[in-house]
Image 1 (tube, rainbow, N blue to C red):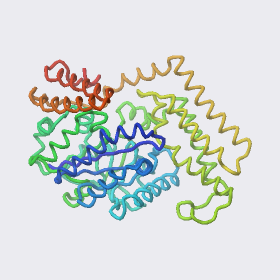
Image 2 (image 1 turned 45 degrees about the vertical axis):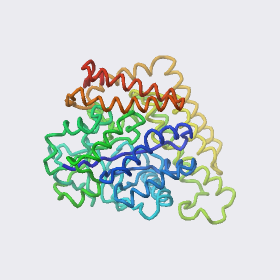
Image 3 (image 1 turned 90 degrees about the vertical axis):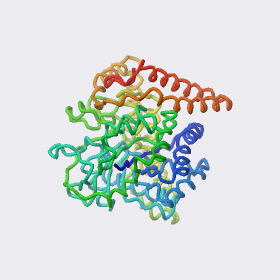
Length: 476
C-alpha cells in the first residue's frame, strides 16, 4: 500500500503576524523539518498564494527555502488553487480563472521554476461541473475530490485504479473520508496506531488517498506531528506524492462528479444543499453576503476603467485606472471563503469575520472611480443589513438554535470504527507532549503549555479507557 497524504495550508490575507508566528512555529516549521529529517517521506502540499504573500510580508524566508529544498528533493509537490481561497463553485467562471492565474503567478514568483503544478485543489474541496471544466481547460492533469463526489452508479471506490473524470483529460483522486477524519480528529495518534488501523490494507497493491488541513499537525492537534515522523521512518509503508500515483496505477472507469465539499454530510445532499456551509438557502445572512459579493463582482468587472492588470500593470496608469486597480485588488482578497463559513452557524459563528468580509466587499465597490450614487447606496445598505441582521440573530438566540440543529445532523459525518490502541502506545506520545509543555512554560508561553496539558490529560483518559470516540458526539 502507498499512502498519499495531501496537506492544505492557508491563512487569510488579513491574518495577524502574532497568529501567523504561532501557527508557523507549531505547524508549518514542524511539518517541513520532519520531511527534511526523513528523506523517504513524501506529501502533496497546497499553499494558497495568500499565505505565500504573508511569508514574504513577515519575512518567513526560512520556510520558503525549506519548501524549495523539498521540491528539489522530490519529497513534495505543490498544487495550484485559488489565490485567496475563494469558494469556487459559487463565483463566475471569469473569477475562477482569475483566482487560479493569480495563485500561479504569485507562487511561481516566490518558489521559482520548480513550481510547476500538475494537480489542482479547489478550496474546501468545493466541486461543481463548472469548476471541473475550468480546471480541465487550464491544463491540469489531476484534481482532488471528496469521496462523496464519486458517481453513485459506479459502486464503491477502488484504490487499485485511477479514475478519469468524464469530459476531461484529468484523473480524479477521491480522498478516503474515514481515515482522513480519524487522522484530523487525532484518533490515529502515532505510527503504530495508524498501522494497526490499516493492517488489512498494508500488503495490498493500492493507494490510500487522504487529505486535510496542514495546521492539523501541531497547531490544531498538539503532538500529532509524531504520526508523520513515525510513518516517514517506517519500513512498513511507502509514502508518495499524488503525481507519483499517475505512473503507478492504470486508468480504470470514467466517472462523473457530484457537487460536494470535504465538509459535506449526507443530510445536506438529501436537501440538495451541497454547499450549505457557504450558501444556505435558509440563512438570510448567507443570502445577503452573496448578494453583496455578486454585486461587487459585477461592478468591478464592468467598470470602463478596467484593464488586464495581470499582464499590463506596469504601464503608466491614469488616476482612475489606479483607482480601479485598487478596487480590483480589494475584491480579489474579499471573496475568500471564510466569511460565508463563519456565517453558517454549522456549527461555528463569528460576527467579526462576517463584518470584516462584508466591509471588504463594500470597500471594493466604493473604491471604483465610476460608481453611481445609487450603486454606492446599495453597497452601503447591503453591508448594514448583513451586520444588523447578524447582531439581531446573535442577540435573539437564532445562532444557538442553528448550531444545535447542526449538532443533530453531525453524527452522520462519518462512519467510524477505530482501532483500540494498546494503552502502552500512549506512553511515548505523552512523554513527547510533556517535554513540549515544559519547553513552552520555560518560554513563558503559558497558553500553549495549557494546550499541551489538556492534550496530555485527554490521552491519560484514553489510556485508562475512560473516553473513546463516539460517532454522533465525537470524543466523550
